[in-house]
Image 1 (spheres, one colour):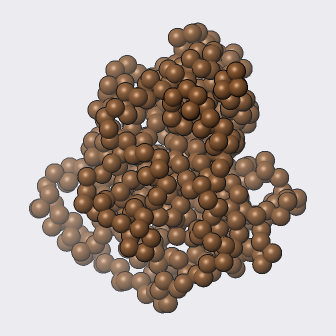
Image 2 (cartoon, one colour):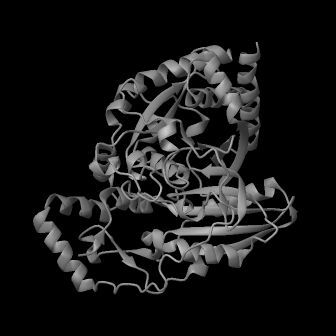
Image 3 (cartoon, one colour):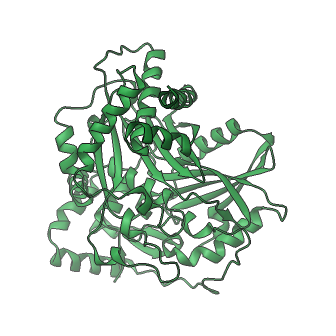
Length: 478
C-alpha cells in the first residue's frame, strides 16, 4: 500500500503558487574551523545522516485523475548533489549580501518532481565565516514524524564521529499508474467522503480541505474567541508578490529574561511586546494613523501537550523527548498587539494579559520541555506554526510571529560551530510579513521574511526591533 499524503500535507501542495511558496527555511552562520568546512564535507555529512530522515529521499507522485491524494514514493533518480548546492558571495561577503541571497532563494518554489528540500552552502563570507541556507516544504512536516534535516546534522560536540546510518540505500520500486488507480478506488470504497474532497482539490477548490485540516490541528476554538471581527486592515495585508526581502535582528536572552523577571511575564510575552513596539514605530514612519486604541492582530502558534502514548516515551539513547511529544500539536493563538500603546511597560502588561488567557487552558508546553527535544528542533516547530497560519483566512490576522526556544549550548556541523540561526517563515496569502524568532546559545535571533513590493523597508523594521529591545531593557534599569 502506498504512503499517501495526509489531507494537511496535500493541502499545502494544492494551495502553493508562485506568490506563496510553501516552504520554511533557515539561515545558519558558522565559524569555519581550522580543519575546514567546504562543500565536500557538508555533502558527506548529509549523505551519512540522510537515512535518519527517509522522507528526504522521497518525492510526491500524483494519482491519475486526482482520484485520491498524492503518495510518497522513493525517488528512483535521487541525486544528493541536486539538493545540496554551493553558492558564494563576492569576497569579502557581508551580512546584507547573505540576506539578499536568502531572500532570492526563498522566493523560488521547490521542484515538485523531486524531494521537496534544498540546502545551500554559502562561501565567501567575511571574518572566516560560512553560512548554510535550508529550504523544506511544509508538506514534508507531517506533525507526527516531523523532523527537519537540521535535527540530524547538528551535534553538541565538534569532533563527534559521523556514523553511516545505511551503507547502501536502494529505492523501492514506484507503483504503476494502474496500481495507484486501484488503491484510489479501494480508498474511495472504504472512505467515500474523501472522493468529494479529492475532486474539489483537482478543481483547486480546497476550502473544505483547509477547514478540515484546521479542525484537525487544533486551535480553532481559541481563534474564534479572538476573531469575532476581522483583523484591522493596513499595510501588512497587501497582495502578495512572488519576491521576498529578508532582514534580521538580535537580542541577548539574558536581557529578555531580566525583563521577564522584572515584570512577571514570560520571555514570549517580552518578544511579542518588542515586536509590538517595533511595528508601532514602523507604522508611524510610514505615515499611518496610530491612536492609543490601535492594534494589529498576530497569529502566535504555540506547542501544546499531546495525549498520545507515543508522546510519553523517550529515546533510550539520550533519554530526551521525541519530537512528536512537543511539536506534533500546535495551537493557533490570535493576539491583538497593542501597537497604539506608547509606554513599553504598559504594552508588555497588555500582551501578558492577552497571552495569559490562552495559557490558562493548561495545554501549553513550557519552554524547558521544548528544548529537551532530541537534536535542533526549532526549524521543525517553525514549520508547524506556519502550517497552522496558512490554514486561516488572511482576514483573521495581520502578522505571523513564531517564537521557538532552542538549545542553550553550542551546536556543530562537521566540526564547524554555529554562531547564529535565523528562521525564515513563509508568508500566507495576502500577508506582507512573518517574524520567526529562535533562541540559541544565549542569543535571540529574529528573522523577518517580507514581501518585496509591500515592505521594501523591512530592514528599517529590523532596526526598530533592536531599538524596541533597548527600550524594553530600559524598563528594568529604570
